Image 1 (cartoon, helix red, strand yellow):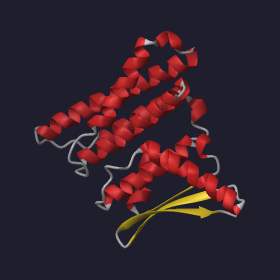
Image 2 (tube, one colour; image 1 turned 90 degrees about the vertical axis):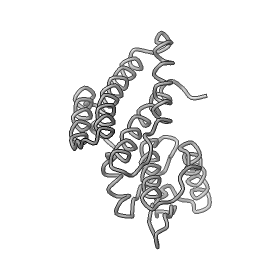
Image 3 (tube, rainbow, N blue to C red; image 1 turned 180 degrees about the horizontal axis):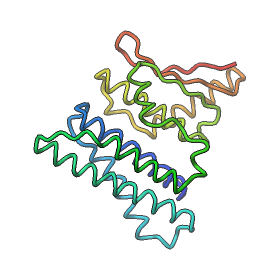
Image 4 (spheres, one colour; image 1 turned 60 degrees about the vertical axis):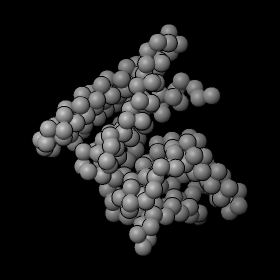
Length: 210
């Protein structure tokens, strides 16, 4: 069973992924809005709102920040959905999202020193057909694994491949098992994962780093 900190980390990743999938929806890359992940986020927020007494001060602070970020995103999504339905065009979501992230970074400066690649950078790398990340302890590198998952998912979507059976949990398990297996077989520490598009097909490679 996941701990509170693990669930809050997953909530943060889900909110980030929701923003990416809404970007794809508004940009024409998705036929439907990402209601499943939105429902999952609201379920977690509601559950912890009802059991706030179980959270430590730092956890409550983090949850409040995430809840506020999600509320701001949701308001942007609602307005853009309305504009989309009315046939209007609005091109300012990226700027608004950046403003939200900047505000969060200002409130949490300790997290900015070792910031992971931004979702936009992951999307750009996936669009160019190549994304690389090195893992040595996937169980402690959730952000890296999440970036790899997002790049792999977006590359498959852009290539028109089926993604319905791809899940974050099974992907995490795959990366963890593959890394441990290669470390044991090759007596190495680092494993580099590469998302590539070869002849129109998306490939995920695991390479041993000396």
